[in-house]
Each structure stands twice: as C-alpha cells, then as structure tokens.
Length: 566
Image 1 (cartoon, one colour):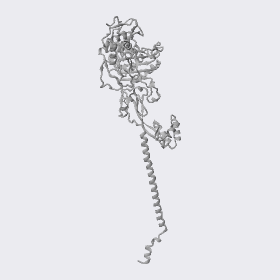
Image 2 (cartoon, rainbow, N blue to C red):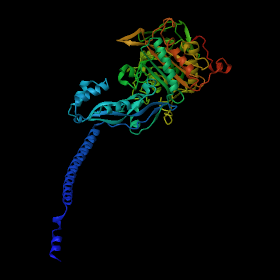
Image 3 (cartoon, rainbow, N blue to C red):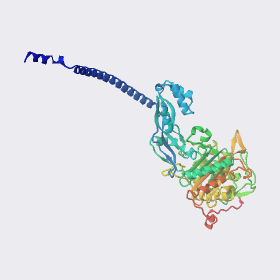
Image 4 (cartoon, rainbow, N blue to C red):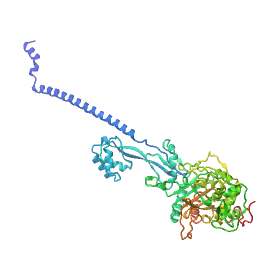
C-alpha cells in the first residue's frame, strides 16, 4: 500500500463532512435526553402507583367503617302476591375529611344543593379528624349526579338499599319498617328480620290487601264520624286462624317513620290490653252452656239490682223481669251474666278463660305483643265483674281468636299472619260442637233482634255482640264520654268463616245516633259496612235469610224466662 493510501485510510475521519459529525452529536444528546426523561417518567409513574395503592388502602379502610349493607333483603307480599315491602338499590354519599381540600366551599355547595343539610354541621363533619362521615344516604340517581357535578374531592358513594312500602300506611302496623341500615325495627320486618336480611327470603302474609283497604277505609270514616281518639279492627279466618286484615288507627307512614309519634306507631290490636265490656259475655255464656249449668230454656230474675260482696250489679237497659238465657244475651243483661258465672264458680271460670287463650300473650308473628291482665285473687267479686267484661284485660287479637273458637265448632287455633301458618300447628278442643252451634244461633239472634242490629249485613247471616267498656281514671271508672265501644261479629253463621272486631276509643255521639256512643250505635254499623263490602271479595255468597231451611237452622226460643236454673 502506498503511503498516500495508508494516510487516507487511517485518517479518513479527519476529512468527513461537518454534517455527519453534527448528526452524531445530536443523536448522542437525544439519547441522553431520552434516558433522562425515561428515568423521570419512571419516578412519576412510581409515585402515581404509590398514591393509587395508598388511596385504595384508604378506600378499603373507609369501606370497613361503613355499616353492613343488606343487599337482597326479601320482599313481603300479601296472599295474592301484592308487594307490601321491597328494596331499591340506591347510592349514599360519604366523605373522607382528610381528602377534602376546601371544607368551607364543600359545605357551602352541599348545603345549597340539599337545604335540609345545615352548613355548620357539614363544616364540622368535613373538618373533623375522622376518615369517614356520612353526608346523605339513599340518594336518588338525580341527587347522586348532582353531587358528582359539584366536583368535590373527598366525596365518595356507597351502594346501599332503601326499603320502600308501596301501600304507605295501609298495612303499616303489620308490615312494620326498617331503619336506614335496613335492620327491622317493628312488625313483620323485625319478627322475620334474620330471614329477610341474611337469607333474602320472601315472606308471604295471609293479609288480603283488598280486605285491608276496605277495613281501613270504613274504620277511618267511622273514627272521623264519631270523633274517636283511636280505632282497632281485625278480620280473622275462623277455619285456620289466618288474619286477612288488621288496622290500627292512628297510623304512620313506614316510608317516613321518623315523622310519627309513639301513639301512631303503637299497635292497638296486639300491644294494647283492654277491658272489653259486654262482648266478654260471649265467653260467659259459652262457659255456662258447655259446663251444663244452663240451657237455652233456662232463665234468671233480673228485676232488681244484684249484690256481690257489697257491690251492686245493675243492667244498662233493665227489663225489670225474669229473662230467658237468649234474652239475657240479646239484651246484654249484666245481672243475668253474673248469675251464670257464679253458677260455674270463680275457679272454673279462670280455667275456662285460660283454656281459651285469654290469660297468656298471643303467639302471633309480631314482636309487639301485650300481656293480658287478670286478678291475683279470683273470688266471687272478680268472677262477677269478669262475666260482663271488667277485671280481665286482653288484646283485640285475643278477643277475635277466642270468638273464632266459640263459633267454628270449638277448635282453638293460634292466630297467624302467614299463609298456611297453622299447617303444622296443634289444635285444641275448647268447647263442644253442640255448644258452638248454640252460640252461633245466639250471636245471630243478638244481631237480628238485640243490641247488634246495626252490625247486620242482609244475606250474609251475621252474628255478633256489642260492648261498651268504661275507661279507668285514677282509682275508678269514668263514664261520661270516656269509654271504648266494640262490636265482635262473625259470618256466615251456618258455616262460620270470618270473625270481625271493630273497636273505637272514646267515640262521641252524633245527631244521627241521638247522642248515643255505645257499641251498638258506633262500632256495629262500621262492622256491618265492612262485611257488605268484603263478603263478595272473599267468596261469601249472599243467601235468602227468610228461606225455610235457614229460618229453621237459626231458630231459637226467646220466650221470657219463667224459672231459675236449678
């Protein structure tokens, strides 16, 4: 190789163009820049990842502070599948005060959006040391969107359920309600809380919302018409113990229970314990008949007051003569009832009422259950007053359940709010079928010819008994406008199916009732209207009550009593 060639090969780089050198230098600078940016990006990405992990941990910690949600709480329906209680999925807003950048602005925006939220209270929440606080629960989708649009950092949402009651007040005391965390607070909601909440089970009630509506409507009208303080009503199937309607007034809206007072939430049908007055004579007469102490041809002298242990017993509407047993029941004679009870005796009376389920709390599927009251010492005076409804206090539920056993052939079943709730429950024979048949005729007589006339519903063979119970005040009873009026009836009496009770608390007489406010003038007509309206719905067809077969089946000798039972 020549010297010149060697020179060119070894030092050719000295003669490269300036553009080639500058390009390599630019590439080198770019590589360094890319490396720097890559390191910077990795650092930023790492920081973001760290923040995301920390935020996720914070969210998990916040979630652990939230109450357990009840996703899937079961529905409550009536016997026909109508929904009485169900749940909707909602969102609830909460905040982590540590994530709030401007608590003053956040409180102002939220209180403007929701006027019910107080600015001062919100500000205190958002500046606290906690990492979780509720803002507003059970939001509508529109409300949740409105909060999102405020763009406040540190506000989050939790998926929850809101319990709703489509029929509002109509079955409030039976169905009950839940708190904001979906825990059962009263009624069926509380009694079956575990099944509804943890198992998601649906509960089918024996209630028929159609019958419930009719009973509610008639009782509300009656309560208003007679200016009563409160009212109770029950319709029970005497063949199986199922309750198809139960109304307690005043009532409340289970969708907004916080707006109700204790009087409205109180279930007068199950928790209320009352002296029942003359409707209790149903048990007195059935007891005496079943014990063989009297028969339908027996009679007692009611011509003058009767004394027991220094206490004077008199009749509200005295006939001042001997009365036959049917007349004693038809005219609601206190004197006749007392004499029957004393023939049976105090101890046997106590045993009979206990056998009828009147001296122990009912076992209905509700947590609100009152305890009956009875005398500690059960002597002649107690036996006398109890015979016409004073001295023993029971719930309206116990009353209808006992009457069901009196008219259904003598079978006592526990009352139930569930369809087929008594399918496997034990039954108890409490009176003979013969006594039950006589009581049906006597109850029918009381409606056709006695104090219960206004409780009649032509064609449906109604039987029943009225009652007016004075209320106590201090150490004694107050008579003037301080009483409860009652009607307890059943239909159709040839083949009894339904028992109905209507009770008004302190009703006032009207011009239409000539100023009277007793059970026959106030509660009885309400019950009669209910029967006329529900009978076609529950499948009870009208009959010709004047037909010979029905007249023969319902016939009873009401001739004046002429001699005492021996």
